Image (cartoon, rainbow, N blue to C red; front, side, top):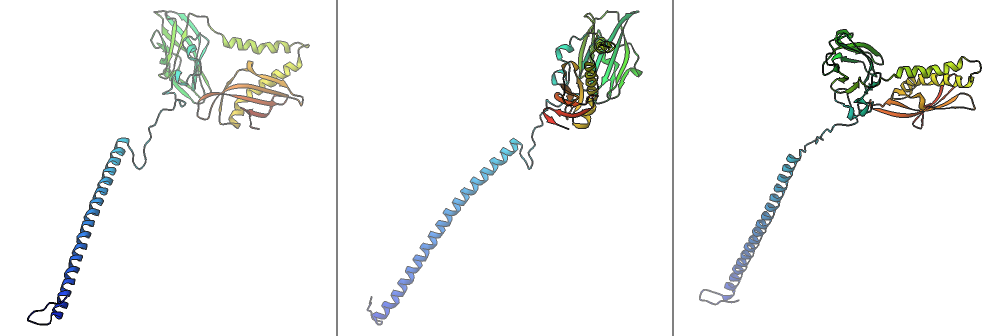
Length: 322
């Protein structure tokens, strides 16, 4: 481009003008890029601001959810009661603490026992004389010693007026039985006794026929002895009876020495006994026990014993112990 004027060469003026034009164009282009960059930064900033706001809102919601749900470094789970776990202070007959059927606990006869996990109570005798109701009772502790007030037994809602137990407290060592007599005011001629220690309940009805479990047991034990007195009695039957009796007497120590369970009782009438060809006997029965946590249950036991009743093998619920 050439510009001619009075001051000089139009060529030279053209080169200067071209440089100025190029500089101006470059400046405009630079300003355009700066404007674009600022717009991009504003757009990015706005996007980051929106993203940060969303994150902040999500964090707030999470914190509120944690506050409502109770979360923390270690969330605490609610501790629910275990129905399989019982104690003398919290268990009840309906909660598995009673071993005697609940219906039977409401109508026991004199001579019958109310059995709970920790102990059992039996009304053995009742006698009315001189305006008093004299009640003979037995309290048997199981695996733990017991201290029970004589006032646990009531007649017509009233505690005894006197007791043969020292200080009116029935103290029983573990595995032992305490016997005593409680005297009640008999002005109302009550026909019912009520036992309640706060966790247990049982009723004895005095107007129904008294049970005599001890007499029946004694008669059963005497029957083999009668046969043994005769020269023609069955010697094998007598030997088997003696061996089984010795084996059943050994059951508590067998459970104590070979299992985590506590032997409670066994019904000799349900035992299955067989003579072995090798000699001795096999014995199978269902026994009442306390499991490792102290809960009442049953187990199937199979024993092999020598002719004298010495146990040589024990299987519990199908598991060979020795």
